[in-house]
Length: 126
Image (cartoon, rainbow, N blue to C red; front, side, top):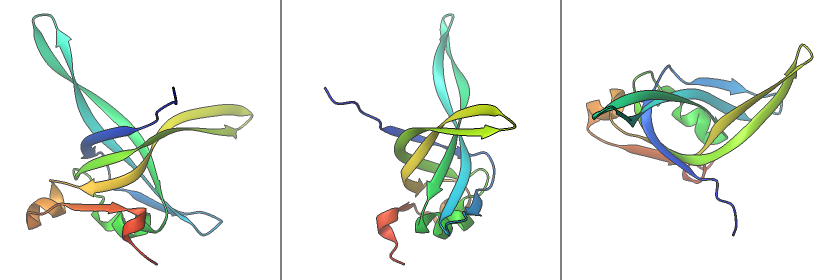
């Protein structure tokens, strides 16, 4: 059987998205999403907060940065990737969610306009 690496989540941005331009000229949007999971607690259930760090690459990253504001609700579909780097002689690892599509849901801007907006790399031609 073939492996599957697919993640879907809906949550809220924990801070404004940060757009970075790499030495290669490509754009990377870094952001973090908070989401709840429900956990059984004794006779009831309790919401438990979780966080995911994400990096969105390409032309769409530049286009959606103004909409990626703290508190904005988003739906993400993507895959997991382990990033590795070395700093001060120490190896570091981080499992990141790499979005393939980002959909702006409720919250700030979309809620004010009563609309949803979705983006993927194929949506914008540069």
